[in-house]
Length: 497
Image (tube, rainbow, N blue to C red):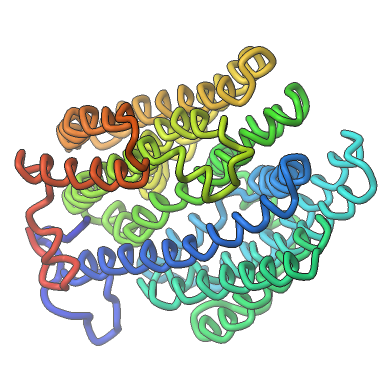
């Protein structure tokens, strides 16, 4: 995925333990990315089982309400997230300075305050939109869990900056497994909608408590609540904060709009498709995010290393993106049947459309993290704002007549625009050091014919999805599209060009 240029220090970590300064950082990031994705997929497999139980238990109407409420809170959280986790990782990955501890205290205090504002904002919106008292209460309860989850994520920046991805993966698994266990329990107890929304609180606490223990020596435990400092800090990161809010809200805005302008049934179909996409959208963030500390260090003192690292990440991410999107596109009918049941059958075509946007997200995530490492906050803001506006306009235009499919088209178009424009902006930012888009073009050319297996009748769509993925891997290997040092990096033998 990524590795270091010859300018990196050889061998293992120096006496000070600065792994990011060595040639072992790249392989460590690759292994960390593989570990995080692997752990996430294990948790997702359990989540699929719980989602299947949840959707069948709640039915189309309450399932739509459940996804709408959780999405609403996440949208408000995204609007106030301010990109603080990325900023914290970037600062913790840079060479240490005297202001780091105070900055981390300020970031943590600001994160707590903004999360609380987000939760209250979501509750106010739910009340103003006429969702009814039970759903407003559910929004509040889910919001409390989100505040606790935001604090845990902020603390985990100290783990990411030291490439301690094993512990980050463990915390993710703990949170997900607690969520799944409680969903299963409440289904067996015939729980109502509110009980499922309340699961976010114990799940967040299960990850927060051990994270505090792990980062005590690397992250200050006492947040600072200084409004004057916050104003200066927000002024510095405001463009990236707005860009992060847009990115988090992007797919979810379409769902919220659907709940207001489309039928309950169409909203339910879109929510089933969105539930699948929501899970998979984290995969590129986990992969590329594992390389962010290396990007940040290289951006500070080694532009050639940065270009090399971004290219290696792109080479790997686009292959995985095509592989995942192919599986979703070809296997959509079976996926929807497993996740939501036969009553959601029309959602399969919605999912196929959204799989196009999912592929674009794999590419755009690389551009976004590279620009973050360069501190190009305003560029990221512009890049994410235009597709969001396009998404809102297209959803408003298409959803009333085309329903869930229209909203899916809107998200796919917007994400594709972001992937193309992001590449152009990064090329200019890194000029004269250019990133080659040949891997993207090659992977698309090889993957497109494999998608034709979706047209085959009389064969299980899961079997066809597996066949399309295998065909793609064979074809991409035949055209020498797999990065030559990828397996060496996974085993820990990489580290140089």
